[in-house]
Each structure stands twice: as C-alpha cells, then as structure tokens.
Length: 156
Image (cartoon, rainbow, N blue to C red; front, top):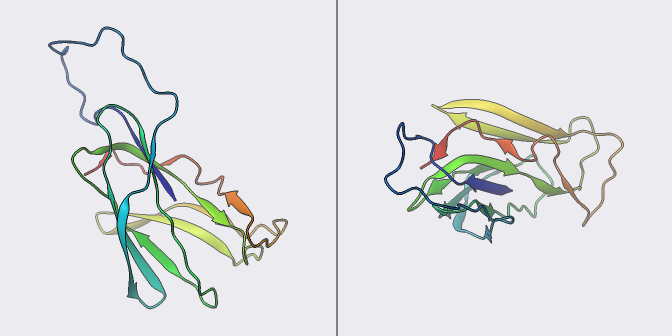
C-alpha cells in the first residue's frame, strides 16, 4: 500500500503571504520513504498496522507500507491507522499493489474500506476477475484504487 501526501495546506489563507517565493518549483519525482510502524495481531484473522509517517512541508511525499500475511487459509483483515508527525499529510491518496494469489474467483477480492467518524466507507474493491490468473510472484496494481483520494483534507 502506498500513501501519497501532497504539498500545500488544507486551510488556504485568504490574503497574500508577506514574502511570496519568486520562482517556486515542484519536484518531478517525490521521494519515497519507508515509515517505521508497528504490526500486531489485533483480533481473529486481523492485523493492525500503525505507520508513523513524516510528511514534508515543501514537497509531495510517498510512503510505502508492506502489508503481508503468510497464512492464506482464511479470510484476513488488515487495518492501517495513519498518523502524521511534525507536518500534516495534505490531500492524501493511496495506491495498492498486490500479489495475484487466489484472486480469480467471484468471491476473492480486496476491499479498501475507510473509516470516518466511526462509519465504515467502501472506497474501492478490486478482484474477482475471472480472467486474471493466479500467479505467485506476479504483482498487479488495483486500478480501482490507484491514486484514489481518501476524501479527507489531511491526516494529522
């Protein structure tokens, strides 16, 4: 799972800044960081991840979170709780890359669900494509999730 934090502020100012930059530039490739995080079993067939992300105030930042499971004999859930340190993660979006194992049945899919004010929201679902083969070691990007906004202004 990749989280991208954009540059800027979710609370724009209403007036001009005291010292505007003369020639602002935007990096063409944001840096990719691997945050430190705790992973723990937090229920029956459920892992919880707590990545500590540190967004930049001056450039878009990308964080890769490796979500893994070695037991594929049951349905598993993975909860990822993002918390930003120092600066907020502005206009966050996610991309999901996965290994195509046991994925081609109509009831075999990945759901990306968000939570806001204790309400679960299904962002996107990918999988269940009969034409996609099961391939150990073959990676695919979930096109339904690729670059999807989380629908919030910031992660604090």
